[in-house]
Length: 388
Image (tube, rainbow, N blue to C red; front, side, top):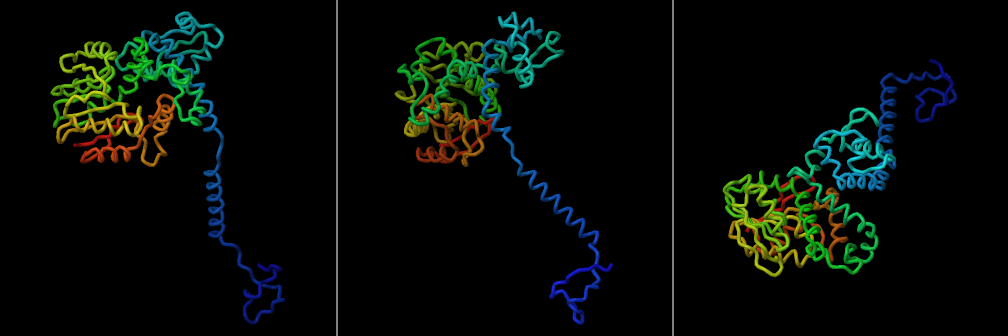
């Protein structure tokens, strides 16, 4: 191929005039074209990976739409009604005393969120529970976890409107904000609130308690005391899955009647003792295993260390302290729920916060424990374990 071309001086062969425009130029090879094309595709992929959009921002920012839709459905016992039999929209309307406007938007939103199933559409539709809603949101099942959602709707939802004030002042934004009694004083002064709180805590931890009861090695131990045992569900699950175990559920006196009801319903009253006391002012009952489920995060560092020391004193050599919480990852990047729970402690308590496994290890070693480990449970929760 003969091309008119000005060749750079360093490319001119000896004996060739720089002004000789009759220079042979080799065509671009097929391999070179492929390499260049692949390079362009790689650049395009890099740009594609770097592409961002606001969908996650909008999803999180408007997340209260979905949250409140679910919370209201739980409050109205929609899932308990549908656990009996599937219902049409009109039947749900009359059962829950709803207005026709918004009815199908409400129900179909729950379908889109994965909490309901539907056959047909609008007037011809029949609605039923999804598998997880049927198992966990039917009040008539022991697996019901809606108690924590009821409490979230009735108490926490309005309190979180004052998160900004909590962040600026570092003070609780619950009942205390308006001069009422503290969280636990308020809850335990009213039987209905006590029951709601106890059932809420039990529902939130049900999956964790079952996982712990079935996966932890209880063979070296015979006795367990659950500190702040609430409705005694942890103790009940432990003795159900480990027949050689005897348990004590230790909590304040107003909780005892609810705990006794629960162990009676679960058929374990002969293996679980309900014992009343105050873990601040009283010594902890002695046992081979001391458990605390969502207890330490209610309190500041000094009280956390004090409770850990009390557990150490109540355990024999080789005994285990097991703390079940939404343990934050040590790098504080991954356990979103644990971090949000810690913000909830800002809303609800004067000094409480959630913590990492590394912090737990430091506190327990200071108390005299010899070794620690972590056991993953369900979702964002873990059991951190210290051996005396």
